[in-house]
Length: 180
Image (cartoon, rainbow, N blue to C red; front, top):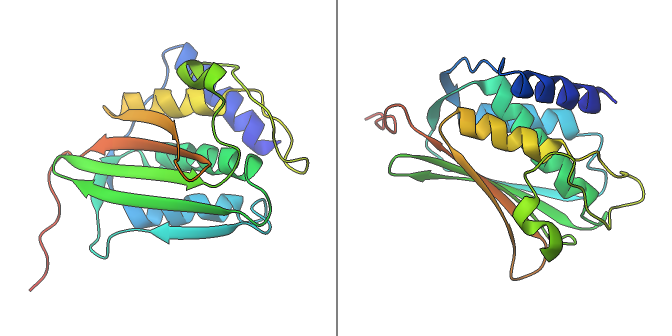
């Protein structure tokens, strides 16, 4: 219920043009761990894998908003993945930014909604009985937040089955130099 209310409040801010992005350097690992702490009780028997570079990645972002994006993506992965399935969170440094991805081995994305998946109130079946069906705001909020950061977001089906949602945030700087 708290997640639903947060999504509705965020969508109201977005629709009214009052979404304020307060960027500061954030460690990617901290943002991911923060998001995972919010879904800990909901992920039940799903195996969650984290794949992040050993070097610390700092990105100019509104950490709270990006945590919300990752929570929404994780919630979708949980809804569409069986209890014995897996969910992987991965980050990769790119020359001008960083890619975040949340992938699973669940039901994948239905072709009929693939082009509209980031629109408001788009939902799809089947979902796990225990997690229920959303109202279709989570991915629209993800897109608005990522776009407000100057980034991009996409959804695709994995060849092995399941879905992959990935988003890109540009660096406002560069990778930190390694300590000697």
